[in-house]
Image 1 (cartoon, helix red, strand yellow):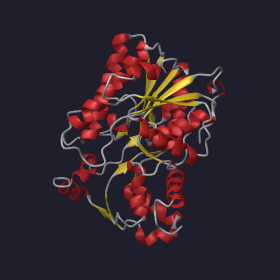
Image 2 (cartoon, one colour):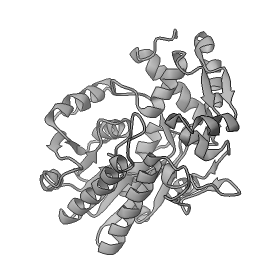
Image 3 (cartoon, one colour):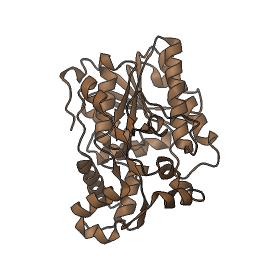
Image 4 (spheres, helix red, strand yellow):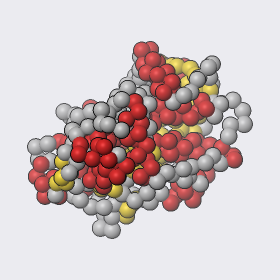
Length: 354
């Protein structure tokens, strides 16, 4: 678990703008910022989303008092961003479209992801904000397979990789566009955090995609899983890395992978749950599809395309840069998966017996 660096505490009241606060990372970011005394401004697409943010903070045990503000601004429009960024000292840009189901066209994801990132960067630069910390994804790093299966911040997914899912392509193109903008302007710093699969305590009413996977396992809705290995990171550690990236001078112009440890498979995750929640053992996945079955199934089932793209390979994903440059210390993967399930069971989102 990461501990704050002595230089990371705010020396003066600073307003932090957070986009995507209704998501898993954004909700935990707002809670952490408020706990640490920051004035926090949250962008919402419409005023009605304020209730979801406040409900998440209540679940996190955080009382915002007068330190939380809301601003209406949509990533798809220029309107509202000038007011949202007025007086802001830091920006955490978490918001990006994440599909519940595969989109009909790639443009449904690529355009809002890329244009949204550029809109936030341009508005931040116009407002004189010195640095933007942007949440990208490991999808922008490790989905063009390498012979040695080793991946670090120097790697990029080729957006033209055969079979690359639309979401992954959107993350590559959005991050590339953000770096191009920052390099071309030269007067605003960009830092990018590239998380692997994000798990951990749920704050919202509906589980995120990753947390929903655990919920599906615990409720018996996922009796069969594809062979697929991936990195896991705790949402609380993702937030910690963002805050370090926001404050530390040495983070400027850098990418940081957020991963908690060695890659695991869906079936390996089920085994962790089986050991720690024996009452749910009979509901957990008992069968793992082979690589050949996954590739064949992906021809007609878009949900299998992510697994098919990785072809059963086991990526070795490095978090050494975040550790050495920013002193980041993530939680163990087992601890994160157990915390995810605990959160679901306590909240009633999963009916499996505790």
